[in-house]
Each structure stands twice: as structure tokens, then as C-alpha cells.
Amino acid sequence: MTPELARRLTEAGLDPRAVAALVETALAEDGAVDVTSEPVFGPDETAAADFTARADGVVAGLPVAEAVCAALGVATTPRAADGDRVTAGQVLLSATGPTRALLRAERTALNFLTHLSGIATLTRRWTDAIEGTGARVRDTRKTLPGLRALEKYAVRQGGGVNHRMGLHDAALVKDNHIAAAGSVTRAYARIRATYPALHVQVECDTLDQVAEALSAGAGSILLDNMSPATMAEAVRLVAGRAELEASGGLTLAGARDAAVTGVDYLAVGGLTHSAPAFDIGLDFT
Image (cartoon, rainbow, N blue to C red; front, side):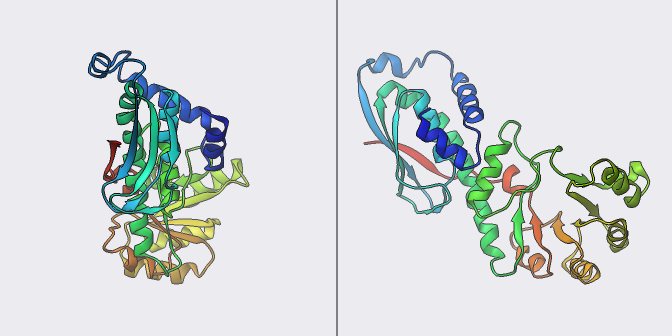
């Protein structure tokens, strides 16, 4: 990986060493020998190719695709930037290098690129759907093991915002915590006693729980599986004393109905766990 590429990854909020390790693992899955390409092409043969969008959407993961190519000695030139809205037929990234290496890089680079662009594209659909409401779309921890940083990066490229990155950087008091602790108040108080400055969010299923969470001092409340009418009532009850996040049962078709209730965020696990791959192909030129 070149210093310039490492710099760009760092500026994007990604750890270049983590990306390089992930790329190495992904490339290793293909084994040491390409039994298709190596008999067909000599070690000195070279080729050029373009990564091209085959649909309209939002691109994400170009620096990761570049890292795949760089690991195999393939040079790249970006033709777009992560977060761009792109159209079918648009060239996103050009690559040149040994033909064998280019063919080995193809699928791994596309696996990253189509997955991350799919997340960015879906996120953009949600952010477009609630534009002007004041609410923002937020992701969850429902990510593929090992890919969380990249998937949350793709959410940002689609205009969404990240929730906590893991169990270490923010507390979320969920129904099981409440059931085991005995009450919202008891669970919240125990966390706050241990971590006085930590961001703590409390998941509430009912308006009574919302009131209890407020009384306990919660500054962030997750409204779980509430109807738009109930969410609007929660907004009136809270009256700006805590941030509110709608969660559970949200659909793209109903996104705006949830957003106009006055909540601050819409939590959408599907951004990462159900985004379809964005159609991108590698075409030799």
C-alpha cells in the first residue's frame, strides 16, 4: 500500500493496517495458484481494465478496491470518489498491471466494492426519503463479523450517521438489561455510577418507560417498535430533554412518517445486514 493510499484511508476514518490485513485475508481465500489464468497468460503480459458501474447509485469502497490491487502490484487511478452518486456506465476506477494479477484482484476488489456501494446506495435512499425533516438515519451493530468499520464507513458515504462502534464506546440499556436488573432506573443508575461521562441510551417499549428513563436522567432514548402516533406522543412527553431514536419495524416506505414525528434519528439495521450488492463490473479495455 502506498503512503498516499494509506493517507486517504486514514482521512476517511479507516485504519490502513486493518484494511491491509483484511485484504490479505480475502486474497488468501483464493489460494496460492490461479489455475485458470496462469496457464493462459505469461508473467510478463499486461492489461488494463475499468471498474464500471452498471446501475445508478452511490459508490463506496474505492480505496479498499485500490488496496486489493496494490497488494498484487496493480496500479489504479480513481475516476470517482466515495460518496459520489454515479450512473450506469460510469467508470469508477481504472487499473493497469500484470494480466494475472489483474484477474486475481478482480473478484476480491469487486466483493468489497459492490458490498460497500450497496450499503451506501441503500443508505442514500433512506436519507433522501427523510430529507428536510431534521431526522437522520443511523446504523446499528448488525454488521458482518470483521467488516464493521468498513460497513459503517459505507453508511457515512451514503449520508447516514454511525451509532456506537461496539460495546465499549457507548451504553445501550435494552429490554434484557432492564428485565435482569429489575427496572430502567436501576440499570441506568448502575451504568452511570461506573461511567459518569459515558453516553447512555435507554431502550423503551412504552411511554411509561420513557417517563421512567427521563426521571432516571437518560439523555438518549430509543423508541422500540412504536407507531408514529406513539412516537409523536413520546416527542411531546420528552419536550427536548433527551434525544430520541426510532427503532424496530421501520420501512423505507414509512420512513418519512416516522421522521416527521420529531425524533432525532431512525435506527435502521437493514442498512448493513440487508443491503443488496450494487452492480459493478470489471471490463478489460
